Length: 243
Length: 173
Image 1 (spheres, rainbow over the protein chains, first blue to last red):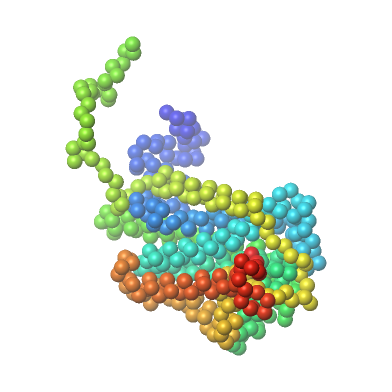
Image 2: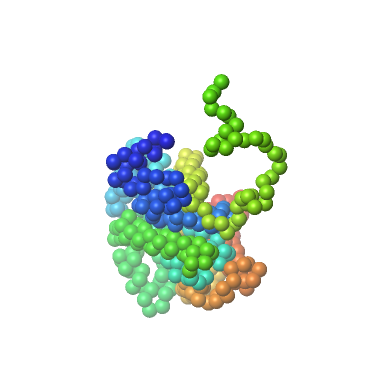
């Protein structure tokens, strides 16, 4: 009996895991089912579904990058005030005087670019596998929204360093909304809080970047994964004929 | 000598070994459709992918610093003015077509097309050889989009004129 087994069989272990025995597949399935952290996964999947060629693991790569972005982003938030008078100086200070400041900023930057690539590639892979077909149409739709949110997150974050690169990229990017008939100018004014990129824009993009968009993203990811789990179990059930 | 007979297992005495494969009925050949436990089979794979992604990001961050230019100055417009790379294709389209087409119709059509895809493509078959039109359409769209992105990102210089990236570099990440 391994150490882990004896811990699971103790009074405390039983209260945490509830399933002390891990002998048969049935025990293991019960343990999986009773574990909070594993609840986002189905208990069983078909062998082909867990192979590299099935998904290229792009969904899980996107999730890991999102985790990396949240962790590094929270660290950056400690040293950053979203105001045109302080923002740029905060970044300089972060890079020169804060422990691992430059390194954490690098991680945040490259994770962000990679996440855009990973999410887009995930979508392409799902297209080629035909994963958007019934009964999973709605999960594809959520995926499209997740891609748009990822782009918006990257775009709002792009402004925050408040350097020439950020300022003019956002100026060009938001000027595209001007061409939308009738509502274009209103949308742009709402987005940047005025007629040109300024203090209001920085504050709005910051709030969107650190609060609104990440919350929406994680909420939709939950629905996305919940549906993924249900649908993968559906396939196993259909397989063994108890649909 | 141990008092446990080494040729005894589960109260059965082993009398001898025969070389070769087991009889057909006993052979366990894993099939693609067989279901396996997610723990550990999938979770180990996910852990490896997670570690690979994290190592890749950590190395990238070690060798390449995030760019930081001079402080934002609304009175000095850089030339070229570039949007982030994932909007480079749109910016390139904006240069070639009327803004209403490049800035509204194309992005609108892409979003509507992607959202409506499962409801337009009613072919239930998932094998690629049986969905040639869908695969061809999507592939053409993707190739064109990646091409436009690369052009807008790396092949455009001052006044959005053509440059060769190996001679002059204007791409910004």
